[in-house]
Amino acid sequence: MQVMPEVTDEKPVVLRCGANRISFDRPRIMGILNVTPDSFSDGGRYADIPGAVSRAREMVEQGADLIDVGGESTRPGASPVDPEEECRRILPVIERLVSDGSVPISVDTRHPQVMRAAIQAGATLINDIEALGSDAAMDCALSHDVAVCLMHMHGQPATMQQLTHYPQGVEYEVGKFLVERARHLEHLGVDRERLLIDPGFGFAKNRHQNIELMNFLPELTRYGYAVLVGLSRKSLLVEQPWSTPPSERLGASVAAMMWAIQAGVKIVRVHDVAESRQAIDLYQRLIHV
Image (cartoon, rainbow, N blue to C red; front, side, top):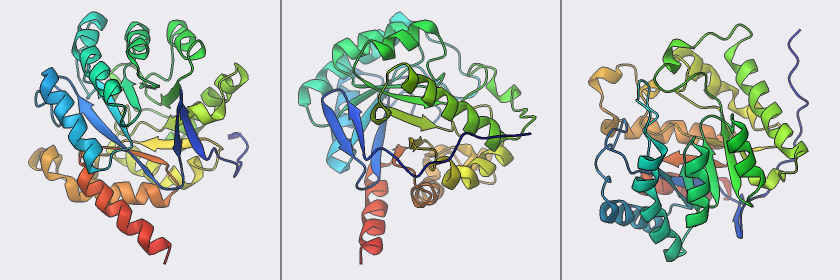
């Protein structure tokens, strides 16, 4: 018999990223900064340090509440990047953004070596697609006062789209994994205000499963943890992705984002910050009339 963990309506009201506190009095925007040559949507656009820093500052001006810096593409089929190369790409960017002091900086990585270096550079959130799956990654989270985002994925980026079999149903398996993982970290001493969970849209899920997970979001947000989602520009949002490039998926991205927010999601990870902020601001005005 399938048994999910107990539902609770008690949720953290802030995200604690080191000394930073991000209130959940409204939906928050995490701006995506890919310092990579091969990310699915904007690979190569911000691969140089000045361009990446400029783009991050632009997103902050547009209303981003956090910036998520990544140096390794994790799109389906992507090849791994050596951690030393990943550090070379992202550390100078993180250091400059931290010196700005505008918003908390997140590091999008699955490599413990990169996590530690990014934290030393000033990052205060670990965004790990492998949900701290290694002992070294777990130790990094436990030994530093940083927030952690736990994402669901099977396999590796190069193989994950071949691993979409969920015998007990995608909603059940994803939900159970995330909640049990988060509760394990709490048991080890990580405060709930430092934890985010992410269902991992597009990671080891086919189109139908992604839609099922979108409909599952209202329930996922009831397990006591703040939920983050990344739906921006993903192929799952459009019927014919091969004829609709990522840069032309803005309408679907905003629609999916607003669906997630209405479901109770606290943080949305987006490429298009200005448009997302505009939509969220209108939504906030409408619900407070």
